[in-house]
Image (cartoon, rainbow, N blue to C red; front, side, top):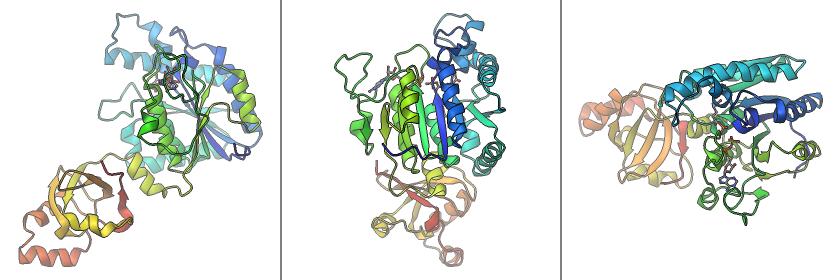
Length: 368
Ligand SMILES: Nc1ncnc2c1ncn2[C@@H]1O[C@H](COP(=O)(O)OP(=O)(O)O)[C@@H](O)[C@H]1O
Ligand SMILES: N[C@@H](CCC(=O)OP(=O)(O)O)C(=O)O
């Protein structure tokens, strides 16, 4: 493992560490994590905390038959969040600040920039940002859904050097260690592919969300931004001693050597597409491993309604997802161009407007 030379880190703490008994917050495990945060800050490392646990912490206030309804979970989150923040705050003699985010906030470029500014301002003033999803207000369309992915989006937005995911397990095993005695821990993962995802099973605790799959997704998001990602056991004291000694106490996913540029990373991993365009074969051919622009005459179909600046998906005629891109023009105008491709007026218009999607606004996708 590399020497401990972090400038800024994001710590993600799972529900099982906050409210292990689903009976309010417990300091049993959090105390050690809080001490770790204090030690990191004393070494000049800026820390951002992404804390789960609001639903688990608030659960005891709403005894109900399972399965719990969505509305019940939102109420638990709203009530548990205050208890969770109060608990964290008690451990520190420096101020902390609460940020509750949704995917709707992060995928909007302006709000994303505004979140970044707030986080950087808090850090500059020595305030510890404590982030969670705003579960009480999210709808299906607006939610990230799990704090592993949220923490990776936060780590990318904050330009962190490392993302530490504290969970109830030592790291990524080749199969779920809670179900298989012969599971083997993977200390270092150089690249993430289908074989890595195939190892991931669901959460087995009563309070976890997403299990290993969402942690691998988070690692994929973070490492592509150049951020080393650790999955480590927050129950064990030795985890923290090892981390501070520059050792790897669990599994580390190595960062890409050539990280994606921030705007391309945001488009690929955070933004949702608002619509899509189907392009003819010439776009794909023009790429040859590099991103090209898209001209109006390459667009065959336009789906959905989007405005200038919205993120859209680019598909080939056979349905392959080729790229995500920022639209230079609205769906209305692109529809007109696609529908009237052969007309003289449309041709003149295309000549005058130039590329409908320009090269620096295209993020190529793994073909699927
Ligand atoms: N291949 C695997 N390696 C390690 N843990 C796994 C694996 N597959 C599934 N799991 C499960 O993932 C759980 C951790 O995820 P989760 O419960 O969502 O934790 P958290 O609340 O910390 O986010 C482990 O307790 C384990 O049951
Ligand atoms: N936002 C939710 C946490 C969702 C979640 O991802 O939980 P976990 O798998 O324990 O990190 C909460 O505060 O309860």
